[in-house]
Image (spheres, rainbow, N blue to C red):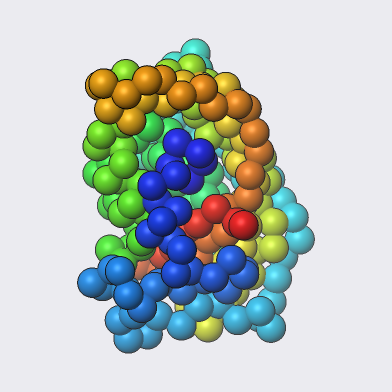
Length: 206
């Protein structure tokens, strides 16, 4: 989702940059399936909040050393659970960045999530474990804003994400590229699945 995830932005080009997010009608075999109505802007919203921190064991650079488990606060389908789930999802991303193991992240994602699938594909090639990422590449959730309920049981909103200075190498033979610390906004849609939230779509706001 940050600059290290530039390959995912090509897949996300067919998504709107507005707060209402949907799966693309082309480019993903499962996108555009029935009952994928996005949240409505006229639905109820919440004020800006800060995500609930998790207690997953982490290394000195802030990356999880074990597969993050969903905290109790992120269970259920309340708005508070949606907010807590976003913090948990960032932990899952950081675990994947560090290890290349994307299975936990994908398990918490809708199968038609284009951004999630693109990120997973990228991380199989470029991650901390194989030397593709080095430095302060962990994502840090700064705040959740504009959280609202929409149609079809979806929830949408925006998160602010900060990452530090890190180096990216997209292949063993590639020259390392330096990435500067920055903060960016991600727009997301969550969907209900088996009594909990999953990531339905995620993209960097333009």
